[in-house]
Amino acid sequence: MAKTPAASAPNEAPSEGTVLNGAPVGGATTKGRPTPKRSEQEAARKRPLVADTKEAKARARADLAAQREKARLGMAAGDPRYLPARDQGAQRKFVRDWVDAGWHLGEAVMPAMVLVILATFIPAPAVQYYAFIGLWIFILFVIGDMVITSIAVKRAIKRKFGEGKMEKGLGWYAAMRTVQMRFLRLPKPQVKRGQKPA
Image 1 (cartoon, one colour):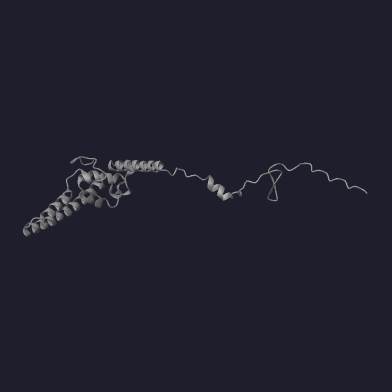
Image 2 (cartoon, rainbow, N blue to C red; image 1 turned 180 degrees about the vertical axis):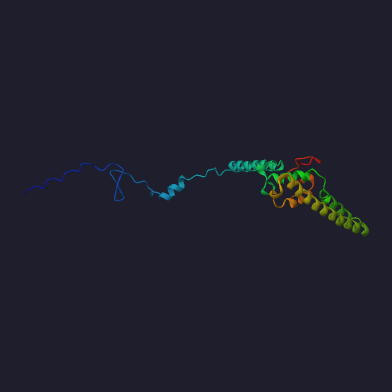
């Protein structure tokens, strides 16, 4: 009886760790868990740029507070880098200096209101009545001073910057600054009383 020739051995045995049809071949051992999906691997590699710890949060809060304080001091000093849009520009600075160099009735509005409030506690109707009348008369003078300041500032701006180069709203900007008490104005006054800008 003829013998069939033995099948020739494969040239190369599968190396260890080879996977054939989803099953490990050549002595490879299973991991005991499924291979993670690509999206899961990418999510695992992602790390927050700043560690989510109490120390990191406290440091971030401290940095933010320091930046805010720097911006507040810069704005108070009139540093253009920290000024809001309504205070930007050479003409606005000129208006601020022009207003801050003078005396204005509007600076006394708040103290006058406090005096009237105190007068309401006096049990004398005549005192209360005349206190209110006096306050309203004073407010009329304040409005007059605001109008005069607005007109004067516009004339000064035209002389300094030219007739057709005046920005809009400078008169109102000047008038509103007159009714603020000097130490409460922002940006802070950069000139002394009587030191009119050239």
